[in-house]
Structures are given as structure tokens and as C-alpha cells.
Image (tube, rainbow, N blue to C red; front, side):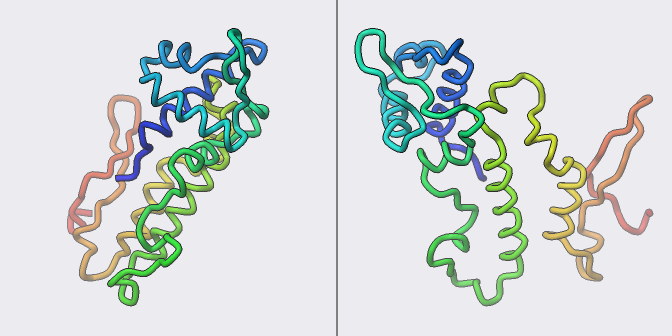
Length: 192
């Protein structure tokens, strides 16, 4: 399963906190940790790492702390995640060596590469400023709607062939009351 590490999650939380602070006021690692229930020593290390790569500024003194080094609209989620966790790798195919025992015969490498690139593009379009808003972000509104995403994933990963057409889940629309719902429950092809 592809998921963020706690460190990346905490880094994004801290940057969002700093982006929403009134007038770019700095906050200490202790203040942020207490506000969100994050272990302070771990958050301090994360903030130091983000400072080292230039996403944050560290302000010394008793009234010091951390603040964003750039505008929140210029810092992407991808930058933060890579700074903390390193490169995002969906499968071994996408590492520097990019080879495995199945490389020659693999029939999902290209579809997975497209999924991998889509994830990276999405994370690169979402900024800390976008994450700081309550309404849906422009970056998310520019992406493919979920229904089309599901269909595309099925098309890439479950191509119809005489052998597997009965096994492929069907995307159907169900009427519930006055509303329609998208369902991906398996539907026998013979009943259609």
C-alpha cells in the first residue's frame, strides 16, 4: 500500500500550521507539537531537515521558532514529502536500477509507470497554500474526476479479453432514491 510516513505527515501538518499563522508569525517546534499532539523530538528533527533544504527559516532567540522560507503557494506537497522521505517509489521498476526478475515479461510495468507519474504530478500541483484552504483546491479540481480515474485504472490494469472479461469488475450506476451512485461491484457479463 502506498501511504505517507508519519514523518511526512507531520511535516505537512507543520507547514500548513505555519502557512495559516497570522502575518507569517513564527512558531516553535514545541508549540506546533502541542497543538497537534505530535511527539516534539521527532517534529524538531523534521523541522530541522526542512530548514536545511530551504523550505523553512529558523529564527533564534526566546521569541524565535520556524517560519516558511518561501510563500506557501510556492511549496508543493511533493517537495515536502521528498525532503523528508526521499524519492517516492511505487514499485522496484522505478528505482535507478529499475530491474527485477519479471522485467522482461512484466505486463503491468507501463500501466504502473503511468499511475506513478500521475501521483507525482498530482503531488507537485498541490501547494501548502492549497492545503491551507477549507474549500477544494484548484489543483484537485484540475485533476481527473474519480469516476474517470476508476475507469482508466480498470482499462489499464484489467484489459478485456475473452479470458478475463467475466472477472473484470464493471463500473455501473445505481439509482438510490433520487440520486445516482457509482458502483464498482462485480457484475456478471452474461446478465448485461
